[in-house]
Length: 339
Image 1 (cartoon, helix red, strand yellow):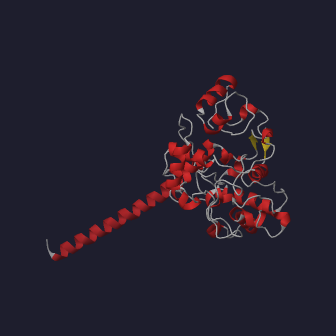
Image 2 (image 1 turned 30 degrees about the horizontal axis):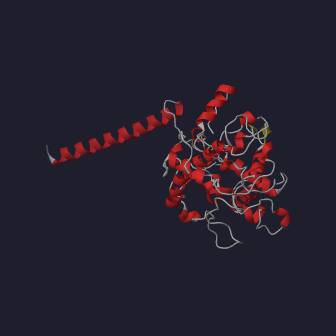
Image 3 (image 1 turned 60 degrees about the vertical axis):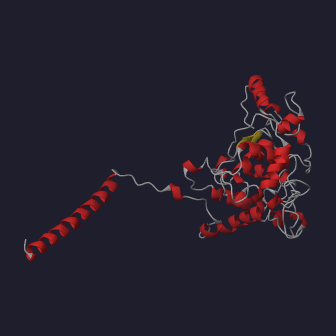
């Protein structure tokens, strides 16, 4: 084959390749247009909205930002550090994101992603259909150890706007991931406070201190790490005072910035024992707790205060083992309880 023949051969090969690529591209476009190929967005890259990157252009941007600020700076806006005394509704210096981590966007920590769309909902603690505002009331009176925030305040409207914003355009397959806490395989033993103390010393004191009182620069500042018991923590009516609930939260989120819902650090048993240890200390007492759960058979088995619709001891309701109590409610009332 001469030089000219080789050159012509290479030109024909190049042209054939170009024609093939153009044909393939055109076929792909036509197939996509007529539906032979379905284009699906890559939900693997989806993540919750961020105040810093996604707020621009929102109609209620200022109200959403206020809600975010209330959640991340709670004591300064509606708590003990608020300048106006009439705005001091929260009774301690926790923030909402002390429990709802990363301003309510972290999965496995009671995330706000999708929560707006689940209300109104039936709440056994009040035995009625409740609004999202009323659910926030519960946090204010229990986790924040304070009083209800009036529903007509800008601060309440801001929190609702923020939660609604986070709940928009969430892929269906992501909703379960961001809902509530991840269940643990509940140990069939009474929680061991001695084991809990050992786990606390190993994993928790670096942030919360040996005395469990957290870290903050001074009394006029926000906590860097919140107290876990004592006068400035959640009261005994809070959901986090239930050992099972606390264990679920701890398993997915602690140690802080190490554990995630899908890559925990602690085992189920370790989370269970350390949750009991944390909740063994004194904390504020909520007024009138006996009014909770008018239908007492709906009360979570790990609710540490009575009355109950059973004869199990207060100690067992607080520290377990919980399986015998669950079995009792299944046989007596036909109710399946998981916490």
